[in-house]
Length: 457
Image (cartoon, rainbow, N blue to C red; front, top):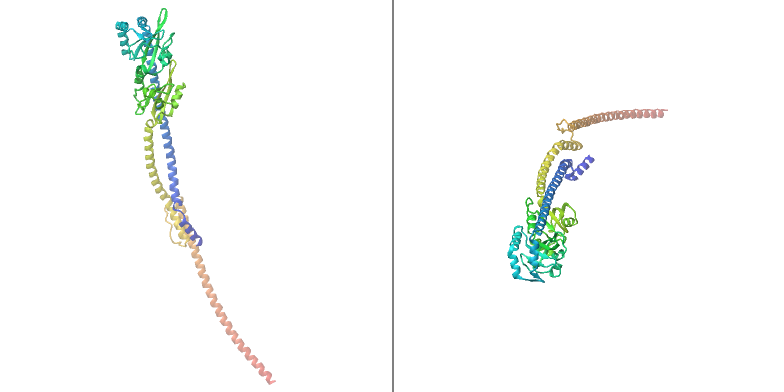
């Protein structure tokens, strides 16, 4: 009884979460949710990897297509200037204009006369038709003897004048023997625009007599790089030079990272990322990087080599946009997991009730038996192990009750036997006491007789 009270007190002190029902709920929910979580995580990872591969493949396709277009553009430019340099009237025009430009001075009358001939109109039609900024002729002495624009560089000397330290001046040689493509630079003579130069030798039977020069802006490159079909809201493709400055305008930062803004303010307009460094070092690849805005992007990159020039070409898209469908799927998985988890919790509660109800009934009955109540029947109608246990529990209860009843009956018989024995002992004692009294009376009489007999003698 004391042990029962101690057990009851311990059970009353036991935390509610520690009972078998709570444990069973935790086990059922855990066993159900862990596979669900593993499957959900694996599905999300596979989806993320699949989308990542798909996005990278798309970026690589865009990157390679842009490279092919840029390469074709420069091949076309080289073909244009080669055809122009081999034109039959170029050497004649170069000789004519060289005769009217000397030491920075221009004979305007003679110049206008020569330009009014077929030279001027044909040159103008050429740059308008093929979208060049300017066409110039330079003689072997380095004098710019003709320009369709006639900007401040006209009539200057590339070898000795102010332009000798420019990229244009450094790229020109009096003994030029092949087409030269220069990188882009800020060119003050052309209203501080970013200009690249195509320089081709003009040759005659007697040798090289000078060069024809085409000035190019980055408009044609921008037209290629800014075409954004299939690139979404944050996709862009752009070029970066060895100086980390833009060679095509950025779509996402049209304030600091246009070509002009980048050259005018290199501090704010430069691009120095993992992808640009890799491409400028000659590597081809794709990876997730931090771009010039500090955003995580998927980037596909490669170098473009045009003679001695190397550009880094990047095709990129924000990781947030690229994985937007994954984020939505993740939210859906979380919602579905929450719903399934709730349903599993409810199911676990009902299952635990089904399993623990007979156990709780047996527990309650054991407490009743421990407290001496052996008349309450354990009512668990099941055919499983718990049913067998409850049936045996009932048998044990009845066995204990019968044993206790038998003990009680034996105790009663013993009590009655004790009472009968006591009565018999009492009666025997009374009989002995009576006999003792009679014996004493007889002995007294005998003693008196003996005394009287002695007296007579």
